[in-house]
Length: 119
Image (cartoon, rainbow, N blue to C red; front, side, top):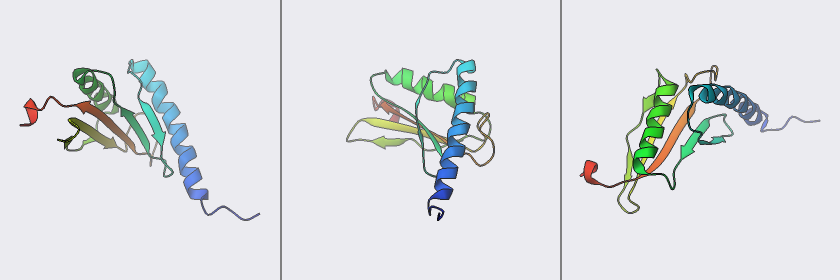
């Protein structure tokens, strides 16, 4: 049987899934609200939130996860969309609690903007 040309991606996804399990176990103990998670083919963990919550609640959620992910986290510039009145807050780290080496964790929280702080 020939090895799949996608074996590396599957291995990275498996590593990401295991790391996500460890990360979520720690997040539960820390009392964090859950996010929606995606594991990319390269094993990157992407935590996302948006929707019917207030802007303040979503910003607080982002800050709680940022604090939890700790040192080594890189905050990225907010992405502001004038057409949709949204602000996308993003950050990433390769040193998230319990994930092990080689695992990148990205946060992506979409909040509705009231524009005053950005004008």
